[in-house]
Length: 578
Image 1: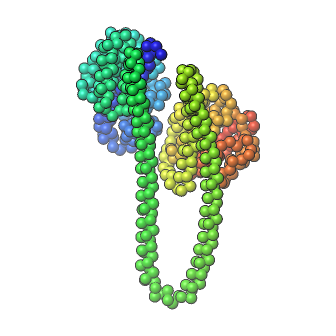
Image 2: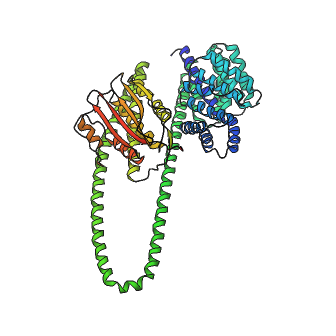
Image 3: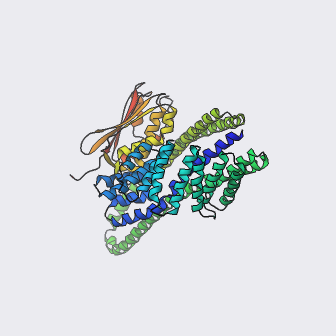
């Protein structure tokens, strides 16, 4: 690999990360103002929830509650905050066009308008419109200086310097990067590492290698004292590229191994967080079980006290009691028999489900294993087009296995009644928009056109998490059974004042009436049919039917072979005070 190619890798790694790190930091100053505003609006539940989820970086919930607050016709300043919440959340989700609409809805009288200019500059940066980004960053620079917040000013200098570096205007880039370095502390912090990497990349791009290497080494040394695994990985990988360019391949190899270790640590950290979240939910479920056990014990104690009180009366009714006990014995015997039959049926379902899921998981793992072998061989040949194709294929296989396990987990929680349902008013258009964003790679992979024609005025009264599970499964099926360059549409039909239909339509391979009847049949048993029309475990459809029913909804299917399919979901609408 040539030195020029290495330079490209360095710039790609760090210039794309600068803006993201800036976004993570800038909330620290703004959150004080948000909390003050929230304290002054204690009766505005939707605003308080919106700001809470905004600070927690839960963008979907932020979008829902900020929209509810806007629909309640708040005062001008509160509107400005809500539009900013929405613009920032949409930007984080990659919906740049919608984000710009929200930012443009904010009046210039807004006290923190410099954040708006800064955010619009970042949107232009994402869209690679660097000159436009610089215009808005410079506007933000004039306004932000009045606030005297050094952290945000330093981030802004880094952004401006990055943009000038993209345009190869090195003198201006150096001017702003040096201002950024001066504002950051000399001790080991994430900002200090970032600042040194920026300066290093600037000099490296100009082939001022000695100056660049000094700052790369400084960034690497500082990164040892911080806890950000991603930044550690980047700084170490950067040193590997530098040593490779200098012909010191042993050192380069050591740095690359260290970078891989930091990458593994980052992955392990993410796994630990996921496990911790699962353990938390499990602990809550266990505590609920303990409470129920205590309730049962209290009832038993009350029963014992009452038994003593009625003991005398029981002696007089011994004959009647004997008959009663005999009847109870017969009843209990029937109950035990029914429970045994039910348990046998559940065990059969479990065995069949494990067999099906194990087969599908084994197929996915085997496909991933085979693909990884090809990936290793292709890596040696440095065929980057083939590498990209194999990586995309691996991602698709992993996503399929993850969806199967996710469905299995939710199905098991439904069967054991551990899944918590909380119904609330949901803006249906926004949720469909989020689902489209999550499945954008799969849609692009098959060149499928997606249309979100859901009415923006419809709110339905359902549980948000279960609704997302249903829509994800049905969209995944629509993509799976659609042809290349197909079309998938989401649209609504209002039945009456209380209910509306959400229709998911595709023009794929369709299905027969027998298959539709099989899918809509209420059955707890899963079966892998020999009929080629039924593909997979059937677990996703079972899960969808149960969750739709839990949300007081219904499911109907209209389809013809080779003419596509309509999945018709009926949900209750949110009741409004008329």
